[in-house]
Length: 208
Image 1 (cartoon, rainbow, N blue to C red):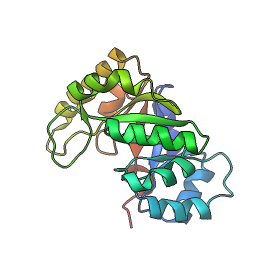
Image 2 (spheres, rainbow, N blue to C red; image 1 turned 30 degrees about the vertical axis):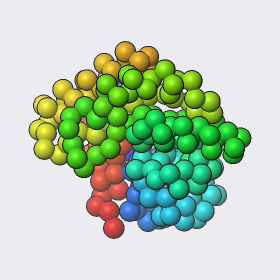
Image 3 (cartoon, rainbow, N blue to C red; image 1 turned 60 degrees about the vertical axis):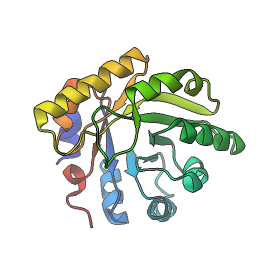
């Protein structure tokens, strides 16, 4: 997919996150040379190698989008600009504490499940409401939105319903961002109010 054409087709509120996990350095450089700024990684060790190799690229922003283990939090806080996958109060507390120790404020999104899916982590909406008052008071994090993923079993119309639920829930919590929609369903996500879409195959082709 042509990046310029994609951006021209999107509402101004929507940002493109290029999911570069599994892609090599040359492919990332090529996309960056076309003007892509935001890149998403989900495996810490793989990402750190890339970040070191690409440190000459000025202005690139790195987003962590994978399941974040407690023992990897410090590395992610040190090296990434945003975390899209904060899936528990315990993890949010740890990120807050470590960000303070690293003298850094990090952008975060809370991962929420709107359907039962054993393959994905995240708050359910009731859990998040229960924890909300504590989460919003945590220091050293900039809480900007929600992230969700639709179960693969849902068709496109069902995914669109889920995305709309996420947008409404974010609005209820007065959060501006919704990170939702991937290569197979980003159009439905945009129509439902996404502000970030996470595209891998659409931009890079198949992963290595």
